[in-house]
Image (cartoon, rainbow, N blue to C red; front, top):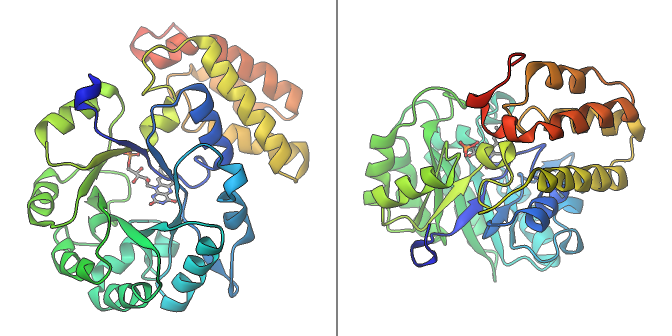
Length: 320
Ligand SMILES: Cc1cc2nc3c(=O)[nH]c(=O)nc-3n(C[C@H](O)[C@H](O)[C@H](O)COP(=O)(O)O)c2cc1C
């Protein structure tokens, strides 16, 4: 993509993946991301989750642009998070109206709120009272109908968002089923606010295709594509880059997770649910089955040695 046509690329938040350790490693080794969204922050038992606050600490996110995201239905919870983030120096906060996870959405949070414009209205009115903060919104096209965004869009006037990132599925669809491009186009045409496209962008060519198709887009947002291949935006990558990225993850999680080596191994194993999806079944199984950090490191080293195949699964070997 020539620089002249370069559209901002945002790293989507993925709870359990794109935390500060992942963000800093991706930035240091590969880059290409203009801003990172934090996985959503929430209030639990009357206070902002400490783990979420630690993740957005400015010194854990030095040198990157981080847009912290909040998830709440209750206005007082939302304002509690805005206040905590403002105290950390954030002036730009993203509002999650997209999470489809049933325990959240069925409590009328995330994408579940899209079926209740009156709750969104209440939330936005409360948020608009906080001074010195700009909002953006990350949303789906609806909760259980693909045009519920039509009742939500006019409410945006209350917060006048910097932009709206749209994943063109309903919450009920979770991450499956067709992307509803027709509704996305209708929303893009109707929105007075800059719109960001988010959904199934896995290569630079995918980004080019979508930006050529919709020149009005303010930016694109990439989630699982970057989790699978954190080097997807970098012009030249080598297997050594993936090893270094992985080393930084091991180093960062060793420092930040305090549940001992067992927790560390579990977390690293979870990373491979998304990372390098072309990894052969045999290598992936060795990672899943490792019990100790040494076993894990041996299995991960073998998988990383096969990174070229993992990035190009069509060239898979016989054991795939
Ligand atoms: C494991 C996982 C965790 C996610 N966590 C969040 C989150 O914390 N906040 C959010 O707005 N979206 C979250 N999402 C949705 C993604 O940000 C993104 O909208 C979605 O994956 C579609 O984009 P993609 O096709 O590029 O992955 C999550 C998705 C997955 C798969």
